[in-house]
Length: 220
Length: 121
Image (cartoon, rainbow over all chains, first blue to last red; front, side, top):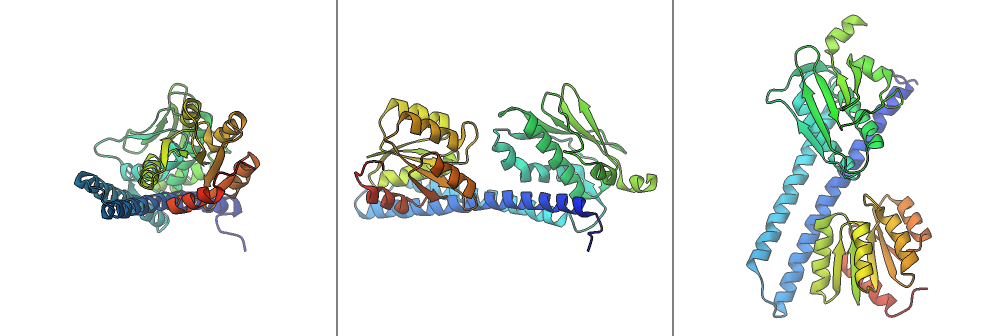
């Protein structure tokens, strides 16, 4: 049976879903591993105390704070993963672009960090809203990030800007150099479904010019 | 016995370091392969515990450089559950042992004690 989206499109979407969940579950595992290590260290300190070593209350308080931090961070990334999972619930919906970009950045931070790149956000206080397929927009962001990670040196600066508003907001992946993102990186079917177009800027990076899915449907 | 721990996850490696210290094992730690190589050049170590997934030089690059310059060093590579490629590459590049991440401090010590004073095969 053929998938209604076509085999390639379905495969690309499934691969994206798999990559994100694999990366985030790995990150959650890291938080759990750290909590386990802090717990082990507490047990070690108590065992050392039983052998006569003095207990340092500040050290214990520090470990307790570290555990709280890990639990908070794990909770945040689980929340973002939950948002991501729900992005496939409805085909088209109105989204807050700022929230969507923040979700994307949280889910992709680890991927970028492996290349020593910190994802920074430059979002306006009131982000534009757009009618779109949120999962596909996240996939497009992922495609742009992959193109940039492939082209930029380790440790490069990368900021995601959200510019403009109204009908055609722009998502700019700014890395200070021109990036070529052809069909291999950003498939035509994805741009069509998002009613979006790709813009390259020799001095900045890549930009996705977005349009409302509703107007896109009217045009096609 | 002196151990060098190399892992880019600072919180994890520093905690492992403290737990080893509480067990009387002298150690230092580094968060990049480059830092690890610099420490090896400064003092003598018996063991290196090396994470395979690191940016920059990476675990594999560091392992190859260590094996070339310090052939007698005993090296434990650390890999994730799903990184069979890292495991295979690590052993091919001259690692002596491997452990799954996160490293269990008692498992690591048991491995070192079992190897004892034996020279690297």
